[in-house]
Structures are given as structure tokens and as C-alpha cells.
Length: 77
Image (cartoon, rainbow, N blue to C red; front, side, top):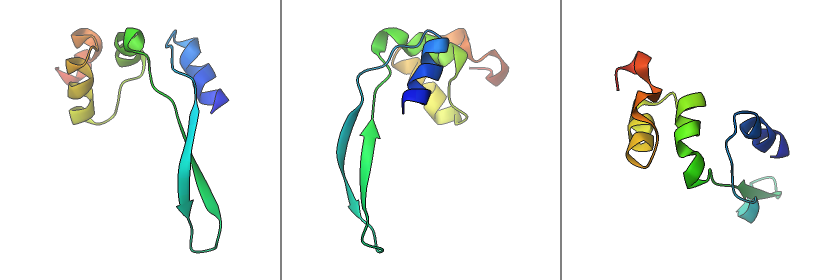
């Protein structure tokens, strides 16, 4: 998780603290853990510009919640 957040920092994308949630009990008896963090609202435009999503629907939603519209010139959005 630290590596992912460090990579985001290279692009000047700020994120929240990381938190852990309860996971699931797998068939083999191991318990999984969920680790989460959020991209900060102030960094959504930068995230849209530098990284974005491969999924057109997700990119459109990103634009609606604060991403820069000119972030996807090749996609025609």
C-alpha cells in the first residue's frame, strides 16, 4: 500500500490515511484483510489528468465529481 501511495505522490496526488477493514474467511481457513484509502477531493483533477481509469463510465463519473474535462482528449470526453 505504501508503494501505491508513493507512486501517487510522484504525480502530486494526495490521499487519505490508510485504514483496515474486516475481511472474509476463505475456504482454506485464512482470514483476509481489506486495506483502503481515498484520493483527496483536492487531487481529483490531478488524478484524472495523470492517471484516470481505463473504463469510460468511471472516467465520466470522475469528471462529474471534480476531474478536469480536458483530461481525456484522446477519448473525446
